[in-house]
Length: 114
Length: 115
Image (cartoon, rainbow over the protein chains, first blue to last red):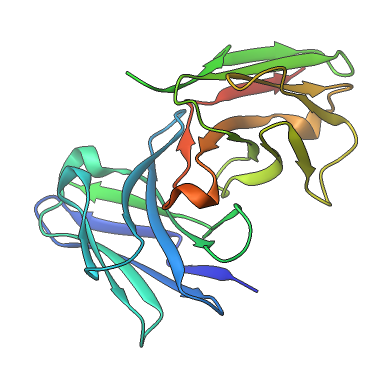
């Protein structure tokens, strides 16, 4: 069975500091991996995705993530945090050889300290 | 812009009074999903449509029903809302598996309050 684990339900970083949100997955077959961001009272917005090919993927708002098969990880990073990055972040996986369902992690709330 | 639209954004209903939430899409995607999201939790899939083929999650209460009259529209009906049904309801769409990477596109959500 597939699963997604996000380490840390809350992460706080200072404005201008590195953002690192951790995500590990388990899947019996190569997965599709996603990061979504959710601002208060809004839907989820796709930040970036990994499907095949280059393992370092760049997304919107300066975020990027690296797929590491050996570590079953897909951590999200941003070199310099901005106040507007404060939001909930969800890592997700789809088993591309099975159904269309997406499995979400429990989410990490990112707090930006001035 | 192609998008997923949900109406209304905020809905207040009374305990036990049926309520319908609406979703429409201009992406022409053949898969549509309904999620329930409670505070500080991940979205929980209620059901999804693959074209007109309805797929219910095993733990979705019978109180929740859905209709998809055409490709563009999908409705979530809550027959007798309880206080525990207060949540954000998210609609999402995606292309089908055969079309390649099928990330889901989410609407802005409807915040349901039950009084």
